[in-house]
Image: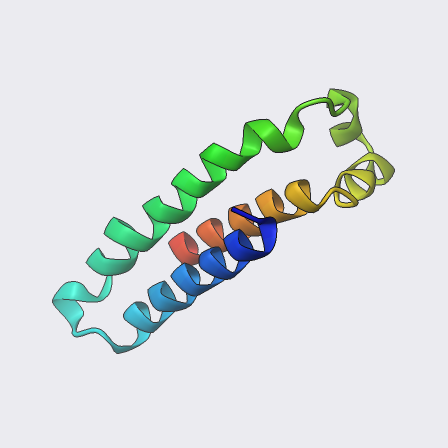
Length: 92
């Protein structure tokens, strides 16, 4: 699957989770996003993280310039986005 397709999928899952948090009745308000949406994003993150980091310098995470260089990789940027979506939904 292409990174663009995975980006759309992850964004849609997060959007559905936020709709659930906003509009579902109280007993289901937290169950749907936490039981379905967040684990789906976390699973996608877990599947993508290892291929995205393959061949990258581990020391790149220790400087701002290094982290910025990681974002030049399409797959690494996607992993960062999925991580942000999953965390944001759990905090919400």
